Image 1 (cartoon, rainbow, N blue to C red):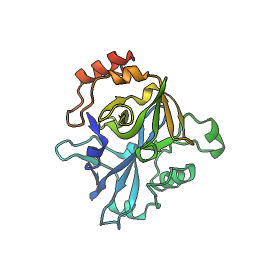
Image 2 (tube, rainbow, N blue to C red):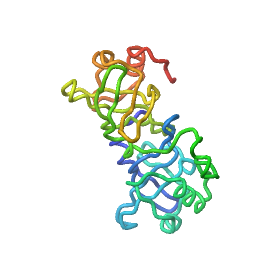
Image 3 (cartoon, helix red, strand yellow):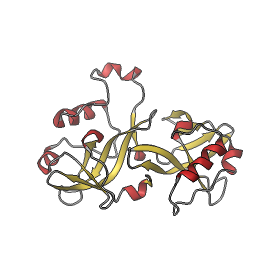
Length: 226
């Protein structure tokens, strides 16, 4: 199911012996957009710490309770390495956390291979407020994300075009991206400003169904992912 990421922040992560916390962020490959880790806000029980939980230890979402079961105990969570949600997920930090839990790491074993590794791990916090540049000019800023909460995959950027199209937000698939400039906080996408201006309207109060997605992909002339 496609879900507004702000709504996903109410989802619970349930450990083997009780609630660990709520979803605070997700970390994904910036080329495939597959989620690799979920950052969890532990709230009061662990003094407001954030934990990094691997997708591999999460079971299917329980929709009746909006909870992801996780094969992590309270004792493990409490003893796990410190993790700062506002910092980029480095090679060293990922190795430290994965070694503790005995998870499979995303990054290569040898740090020297990072320069040729396909894609880096970033998060919604890491990309929020990035500007989007169409083929013929800037179109707005990333203000939110749409995530497939079943497969844990980033599906769309929610882009605020207020400086150009007052009061209008649009959905842009990250798969339509051409490049990311991390220094200038800029994402280039292969669409035109005219096509965005005439795109199907996005309303955050209306669930995204396949009828809407079909119209969106047909409008932009992009190959469908389903």
